[in-house]
Image (cartoon, rainbow, N blue to C red):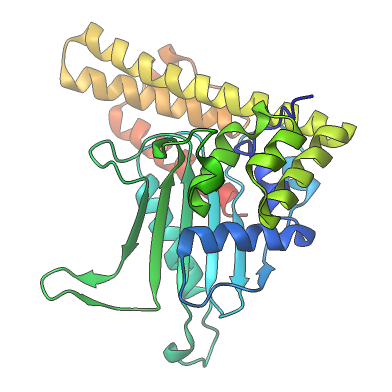
Length: 305
């Protein structure tokens, strides 16, 4: 029987990698991405998995925050869509991790590296074939770096060339990409043959537990539906903004249509009743921009919980 559980769905991702008992699985994923000279041997989860996080069907980003054995602070998340400001948000999260370490009276020298990692189920950098990008604070002219400070990693899973016949000899990050993208299409026995490593065996067991536990399966199905509805609403907002812009025949029409779509989408994600297009069109542009900014701030505050 097929597992039928996608690790990219937020509930499955958080339960597999954000449960304290599954810390070795998270360590395996982190070491595959970061490729540190001294691999991580221990992580402390700062926001461990909780069923309360999934109490309703609103789609919010459920990241994993952790501190490793060397004192590095880490934020790991899965993204199934690309939206404006994504890179800036990743930088913001990394900066927040960096700043929040320092208490009153502490020395700046006590700050440890803050690393933000985003696994993506979509293409972010269309002009680059490399799946994994690592951003650091560097002086491009003199090739100097402020080390042990802030890093942002993006991993575009679909860019990896993944085939069943070659996956046993693939790199660790390629194997993780295979796991994220195709685990739901396999039975546990065959998946264990393809991914025999200890970390993968634990991850497969975690997926089996979700598939076999009624409460978890119901919650997973709800979250998968919410994720699917979110992507549908996002695409609808994009199409609506474009169509309204075309009807106006002006650049400002396209911008206004996109603005209305974003407002309505954010209202849906916040669980509010969406304003009608007609009522929004009656409001001046500066008022719409202020409303959009307020909705974005409220959603960011919810994501940061």
